[in-house]
Length: 203
Image (cartoon, rainbow, N blue to C red; front, side, top):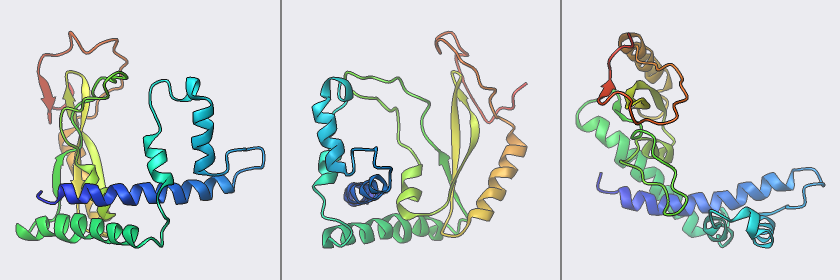
């Protein structure tokens, strides 16, 4: 959708602001034996123990969150209202109304990707969950099949307060498709089935 960039920008500020507020609140409630009482303390601890705590990843997200100004900051309030409107009213609600739909369905995420500690993870496609997460709308994921043995889910999203309906849709789909995979621990996906198995019942 056209406003995904604006949603992401607003969501980013909201997440950073709420991370600092909620983490500080949580740390303040922990026993006195916990020495890190604020996000600033966590940042300082990581810096003091960088050889153990930051061998693979930095803490840019923490540093940016620490720089935010709290829930009363006008910039935060504007970003939150913008994100909720674009993802909810102008996003999911508008798409449902345009074609008189009861729900939206799409793949939840692409198949799992390899972890790359050197250059970062490489995700082969977008995910469905962010729009519902930003809007605060219900989002149900059910098994849809697999690609080379890697499970893939199907997302079912609806308007606010439609949880019961979505659970019904999810149950009906699972009963018809019966594609839940048996858990396996494979040393490699190489040599697995050479084609995708989506919406195909297990034999």
